[in-house]
Figure (cartoon, rainbow, N blue to C red):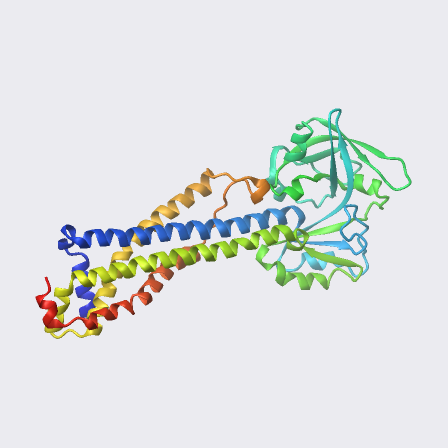
Length: 409
């Protein structure tokens, strides 16, 4: 066994440390490392978890990529999707695509005796992914849309249902207006209530039968207003987008979920800045504390340093001893920090006891992403950066004279 490693282990685990200054120094060092690990783990896991949760919820509702007619632009009333050059089958066959679903939208008003709400009816067809949508449901059930006749069941958002004091099995009158025509009235039964926690969606959208939208918009029985494309991995959105653009025809255009709601994406990107800033601050705090621990340990063991030099140990060996000694002090702090930090995150992931205001954060509970790569990277990174930071202050050892050190008490 190499001498520096052997000697550093001997002094690190020596019982003599229990009744002198080293005991306090070791405790401070381990506490700062544990706190640094806990804060870093919570920051990274909740920050990345929030980004992922918001993107997934947004994409699960509107599709990772949507295809619409160029005539639709930003209108709530979708125009007929052009079939010229559109290859939906080719899109479905892409390895990155999970499934697709067709839709059409029209704006209208829901009215009760006491109140009303402006809404967008998103009509879906028989290819509607009810299983994916099930994660949004908070009451009732998802209707089965077969495109045979007219299904009068709709799904309302929790926000709209609360504003209009509605619940599953209630009836609601919807009014749709068209230019130069009489208003069109439809009576719907509320089949279920959903909640995405994304204000721009929950404030507006209701889900119903595409045949109602076709009738209101004077569409043919097979015409649709757009296609939602769901990917197997949301991280592939930018990579798959150019391929999909080639399969939609020149009269249609593709829109990523991140482009549909840019204000949400801008807010999400703030997480990256916050995560970087907090981790940098914690690293600085940990490194400063560990350097102070090293310097105090060197001063406390000046006599031992003099003895080692007298016995022939080089400055490099002694520096290695104290760097290893300090890193060994850090390891229990790393373990303690990981146990506490991961324990807290696992409890949050299972029980979701920390709540958020969805109007401000787009999620109702703090999401957690337990990525093992980041978890391991935080511990290894703090240990490696601390080891590197200890090199310069360890040169104080070379300034210690063996003769004066032996006399030092």
